[in-house]
Amino acid sequence: MKIANNPTFLIADDHSVVRQGISLVVKELFINAQIHTAGTFKDTLKFVKETKFDLLILDINFPDGNSINIIPEVKSVQPDLKILIFSAFDESIYAMRYLNAGATGYLNKGCSEDEIKQAVKSMITSGKYITQSIKDRILDSYISKTPINPLEKLSIREVEVARLLIKGYGNLEISELLQIKKTTVSTFKNRVFEKLGIDNLAALIELFQLYFEDNK
Amino acid sequence: MKIANNPTFLIADDHSVVRQGISLVVKELFINAQIHTAGTFKDTLKFVKETKFDLLILDINFPDGNSINIIPEVKSVQPDLKILIFSAFDESIYAMRYLNAGATGYLNKGCSEDEIKQAVKSMITSGKYITQSIKDRILDSYISKTPINPLEKLSIREVEVARLLIKGYGNLEISELLQIKKTTVSTFKNRVFEKLGIDNLAALIELFQLYFEDNK
DNA sequence: TCATTTAGTAGAATTGTTTCTACAAAAAAG
DNA sequence: CTTTTTTGTAGAAACAATTCTACTAAATGA
Image 1 (spheres, each protein chain N blue to C red):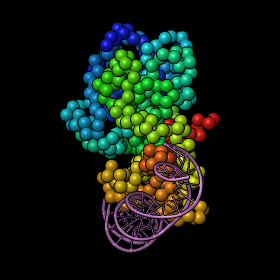
Image 2: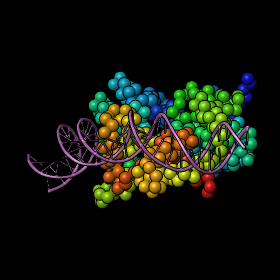
Image 3: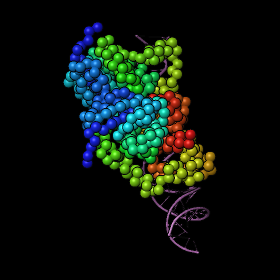
Image 4: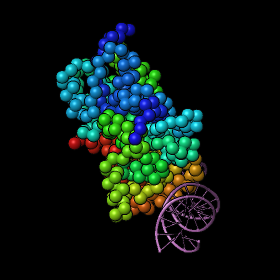
């Protein structure tokens, strides 16, 4: 494996301190690293269209859109761009989806600096980085197709709606945030409730607290 | 206003990149700043017992304990230590609780680098930093004679309704359980929300959870 | 490959919730 | 011992959410 001595990075995260922190760690690894940062979905795409990068370090939480949608768009512009998801969310419910979408690395924000370095290095040299726990989960999924975490039964959009519901948003507000009709929000809410075997917001909040504690 | 040219900082956050990012910003403000970082509740306390700091920048999310409990402990060791809460939560319920507990600053992680600098500078020079929206909330609380426990403002019937709402019952169900009209339930719900300064069930659940957490 | 399931989207009719207003009894304040 | 506030109650109109149905595209399975 050959390592570029001046790899280029795009760091996309809506928190400026996180961008700063990642930049610092990357610079410690690659002194000549070229680093760009983006705080929004839009900026990320703009940069990808303008400049060629070796690695995109991508957060999940974006105010202007779920970042899973960005992956195909990014890939259509730069098919070889490696994507490392760097997320504050519990690995189990998101990692698989992002890996399926085209990311080849997944890292939790709660990890140590050394793990970040290891992940970034691994992404640059071998193009991928996956923790043991995710590897295990991929195996588990192969063996028994029963998700331990009930939230894994939900689709991306369903989780998106559920999370907004939990934050206290009403159907109309959610419909505006996601640019869909309010009846569609109702449909999703209903499906979420059905899939989880519940019928009210309080139960949804409880379930998320039980299985989604990493975040919020 | 005079600024110490070598203030000491303790940055407590469970995400290493956030610690890095904050460090960087602080160093840009104070070239001679002495910075320590802690990733856990335990380490934070250990550092506070060992070293005198000018400012503690404290995250809310800690894996090894409710970070609100750290404030009195920290204060008992260093009563004059200024605490700036740097949180990913945008709910102002948290801000109030942390300010009540003894922090004198509250900053959201979604803010810009300039805002962080302003906040840190303000904490060092004036010992406090609070955004306008939180100031408004504090004023509101004092004007309306808020008791320590916001739930104490509720009447018996209001608590009764609130508890059923929290359990996931709808207005109609509650009206049947309490043998009152469903519009009456709505009226009570409304009054509860008004008294607690909230406007949705998720926030009500949160408040009740916070209240019970205190009594442990 | 063709059938089936899942995901994302919505409209019309129904049902549930809120708002605004109101009023009497009880409690608190002056 | 009056005024004021709080508490418990509700109706009519306005508003929001759900239900049921249904469509398309994409993924999955046989």
